[in-house]
Length: 198
Image 1 (tube, rainbow, N blue to C red):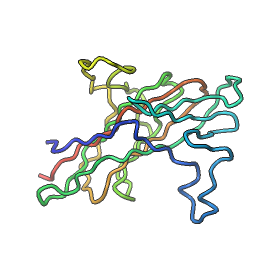
Image 2: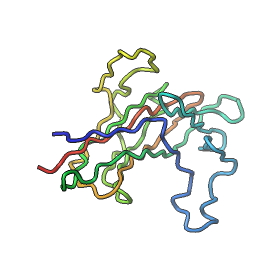
Image 3: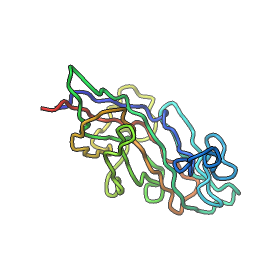
């Protein structure tokens, strides 16, 4: 039985700067790709991801920096902190399911390539092929109709196998461009279902 479902809106996504996880000093902490600026990450010599926060999502746009519209490939990681009820009524909670509401303008070449879930600094879930064969997007495109009902069966769902939670939970998403340009992918929301042991 789900005790608590906690969600974070997609426009709160944070992009990981390239190489920073390996930083051990101030020299390593500055080791992003040359020319990185706020909101833009270069993924190869010609292709960049722009990170645009919208009312309904964070949108990643893949573009050719030279304006030649040549397709390119690359990855970036982004992270979403999920509000975490660690202890309820004296009992430590368990994380049961991770869910991601996302959509791509071209799923065959721009997609979420991995989902990781973290309990503090402990990785508790890895799915390296999360969307092969799955549909995505609870609501297609942006909707201004408040009466639209999402199709929750179209969300990505990962089974966390009721992991006991000790700290805050974060979800990491690897976004992959494969021979694409001028396409976009949106992260709309990320959620976790929590339960009490029983």
